[in-house]
Image 1 (cartoon, one colour):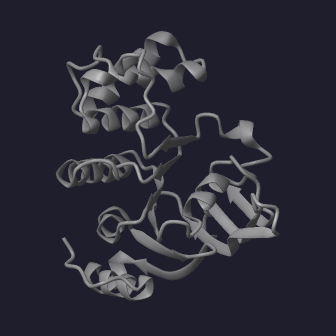
Image 2: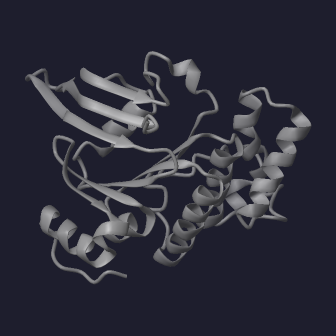
Length: 253
């Protein structure tokens, strides 16, 4: 018997009232997909296509208007407390607390989960070391580069040992060389620690570098194209994604 998907959307729709009161706005329209344990899935689409709404449904921050979303066998909105420590989130901005050192920022999630203080500090230090930040444990965010701050953010997400990592364009504000290094590091850590990851992006090359599978969204969020890169191949997937998005041809880096 096949294992139950770790994330499953079944005809999920999300409708918001328009701010001007003129009817409703459909952000997600009858979206269905499954993600298995250990997969890295990149969700790609233009700004406004509904990627972030889907992300927020998975994270339990909003409830679908219709359809069913299941994460680790639970409704992420109605069973929100179940997910304490089971989902780690890496945002577009590092969202570090400026008054806390790198070590204390990584410790935050562990403290919220009431982990043993000694074990929590050991875990936080270990993750900072794994992310190349040994010696910077007591530095404050203002003293760290953008790439270093995002490494702290990644360490914070991994430190609570979540089953799922949700990433919302976490490298979009970084220069390309730094972003490429962090993408490779992120994929390595996800695979080494047998995590499942959903990675939101609007960059084709990034989606192909990150994902085992790429889901391309059109607005309102629905799957316009899906590629399993081990089967499709990077070059073919790149070409098909550009065609689906109506993007000018660009070289695959």
